[in-house]
Length: 202
Image (cartoon, rainbow, N blue to C red; front, side, top):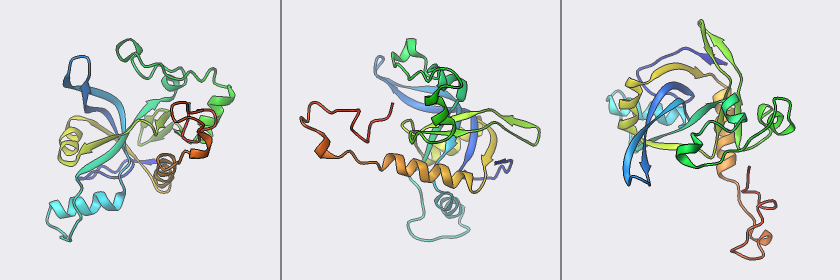
């Protein structure tokens, strides 16, 4: 499922440990760094390859440069299941609690039948064990391209999700962010029935 194939460029499906992200702190009214345990690269492989070759003058074509790299945090499955993957004391964000390991809602996550999440099972590659991780498609970052290359030097490269698993992640992410709420379900624009709205996911 994973392979160890560290290249000189960013690749789709790359998994980094201890990755830095720049975020806006509303309380302090400033920009601050946060460290994400695992970061997963979502940008398309062909776009990343053409961008890298263009910047290194190996192949030059028009419009091949990327402005940013799309990625998302990969949370440890136990933390996400218990709703503790965010520091609730600091963020005051209440996360969903899925219950026990054998709960129906958690089984949907592990079977990838909940469209919001993508479950990645534990896998050992080259004596490196990648833990069970879950991608939450509502949490993603668009990081300026040069900044991402700078941050990856400080992060720990773990592995890359192999073909066709990375393509499945890409398809499921695209499906999730392209979902459409139907106006007919809304009686009052100020009162959206989240239980009927297809854009709603717990």
